[in-house]
Length: 363
Image (cartoon, rainbow, N blue to C red; front, side):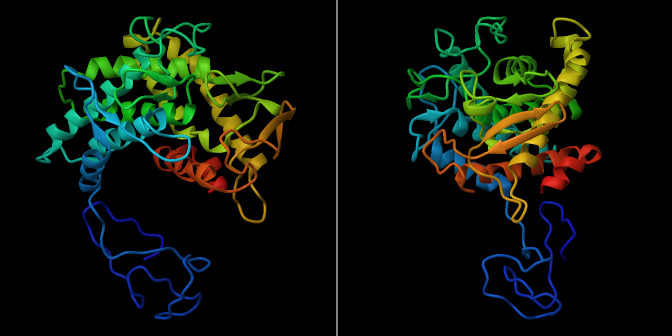
């Protein structure tokens, strides 16, 4: 029934409609041929699939372990600007495995297998960071935060399929945020379950340092200092003609980083108050992201563009315009780029219901 939620593994039944069809407003039993739900309705189904099965299918079809002597798992990509191993694909792999590990019952027979997959995805991500240390990461000014200061936490955006060579330099915040979410899901779920894992400490520290690196290297303040916006990566993007991609913004992940740094600064931070010191910075970043969404969202449809230029009009307000594209996709179109913003904001809505006002307004 529209407005109800079922837990994984349960089934729902509908009255008057067949699974996958929608009812016309004010009627029961009638169906429409529209590919979209009727106003005020939602898509429904009488069964829920297995996320675990889909993840294992994903791993079998799109990943391998290309580095001799290493458990590092790479997620391969194709199409568009992709090809090889890109941070977006690797980020998806880490997000999917980490989130599923967090959702999996503790007595699931595949739990150990999924823990292995999650760590292997992380090792692939870590290798990408290690390969990014020599030049072009644009994180030197803030200082490398990972591996005791040896490596940038935000990898170059593109590598060959063997995870040996850099193909495209500079970090991309969409993949970085997804990977961060996956690490945090995995670490927090294991801590909550009081589970022991040989990699918990390693991934926990890497996640903390990546949160810090992301804020320092992939965001930039406005001229007034009242706003701080996510860039197009560590090397480019920001305010005005430098360009924005609205779908890169992941406010739910920024809240995860805010809370994680506050709760883990005594363990992983440079001081026991570091997380508290960063908290207001994360809040300013989140607030700016939602102001950016408001400035770019079409009033009549609620859609946002693939790309935009965003300006600070006043210390309280932002303004946006089209006329920018960073990957060849039409800048003013709601397309493959822009569509990702919906689930990234939905994640914020689901994870932080007590702070969900801005997310609900956008959705």
